[in-house]
View 1: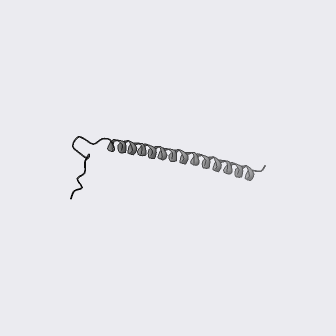
View 2: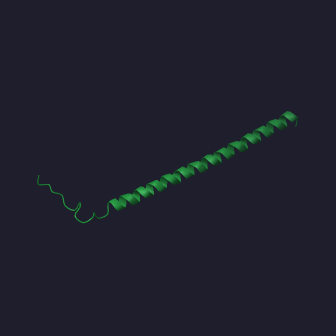
View 3: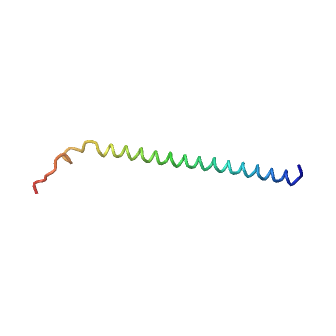
Amino acid sequence: MDSVGIASTYAATTQAQTSQALQSEMLKMAAQQDAGLVALLEEGAANLQSAQAAPPPGLGTKVDVTA
């Protein structure tokens, strides 16, 4: 191999390593975003369950439709 071939191989190898590192970092960021979304949805579900619980005494148990 001549020096140009060695340099080309080194450049290709370095580029592949950089690409793999970037892909790995982007996957980690996507996983963190997904985890944040899941946490937000779980919190929303918990709030919905508490909102659907029995209302306090004197509120929301009867509706006057005689008007």
